[in-house]
Image (cartoon, rainbow, N blue to C red; front, top):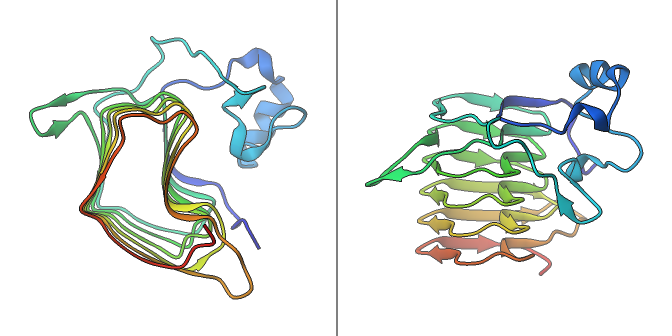
Length: 212
């Protein structure tokens, strides 16, 4: 089974799709049904349509967000940031996802749609199906460092995945070890592609299985 049941455990969003893209009845259903869109939308692509990323109102952002020391078990996403903005002063990032324990999700930590200035560090992420950490859709200037990312049920995309126009991200000092679920095929251990630039992947310890 490629997806685990449940919604997102911790979600911070500065901007969502404009209301005109779905009606009020659909919104009410989504509130209890894990953001399931019909028509042109699919679950993993609700922030894009026809290959383009929606241009959100830049004033609709969240910043100085700290998600620290939580335990999450189960669900599709463990922690999800959407349009969380910030920067870096010295070694300090404006936003932090630190020292969390997340297990048995489809994706554990996902930054999608115009995030910046986020430190993802010191987390223990285990037994995900698809992705340990995702940086996607114009998610720039973030750091993924010193995390333990392990799965014995991998059958999806990548332990760490950076895609779709994301720039200037640092992946450093992580320990990655994943094993394909019996009879399943997976993607990568670490993946950067789809118009990704200025990405540094350094000093990681990477082991395990992947198809590609």
